[in-house]
Length: 358
Image (cartoon, rainbow, N blue to C red; front, side, top):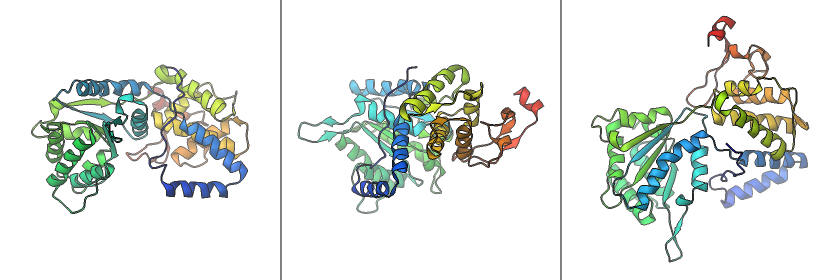
């Protein structure tokens, strides 16, 4: 897979006047060295590198595009799920930036239709989800309505906006809400959007693996035949090792203008994957932290100690080398759990005998 020169989209609401004013004030308070570090890290973090998962999720999205292009009345939903740190949201946001079919369409009168609506699901009820959708479409809820009334407004405004695809990121928040009424209630809401006779919608649910529960535990099996399930793939040394090495070289040398130490361990790439639980998003964070450490310490080379600090910073760990995957000669014995929120727990060491059986 070739190295991509594509840049990530800017922070949501990056054009907000308040955000710009605060950013400018922060920049003026930085020393020239800090401003240079900020500029280099901006360049490093902007680089987007597609993974096999980009090609994987392109399959259902192209199915949606083909159906929309032929005005097919039968819609469907897709679940895209993986553990925290896999880069789900980054991948979806990049897709929205780069996919030509999802860009605004002129309506001939100086305005635009918007084929896609993307939101981060709130930690709340279906009514809260409806309110978030309306807010994203710039329609404020003036008075409190029933959940059914809010969802009816959502469907009306989606039609007015020309939206055929709704992407609900972090959908597990809806399922974890104290107001959660069970899979049947959520399934009914989604089914009504999919089967709206006047304006049927395609839905993409993105989140942790438990979002599959909406389909699997739906007592009426309303969604089972209308939902495609796509679990994202973890990285492997065999399939992704060379590609990851190329990414590191480009980020360190071309984006950051630094050198890559020649005395890294022979199993450096495997250590990096292992320490990040073989998740693309967590691997990238270690790389960012390591480059930033070199810049902060006025080094022209990202050397061994910076990679050790990059890992320590990711896991919010201590400075003990025996529990640092990038430092310990017994790194395969280090066990450090990560929870559903992406927070790492304390490390433990298993015996070399047990590790050898893994």
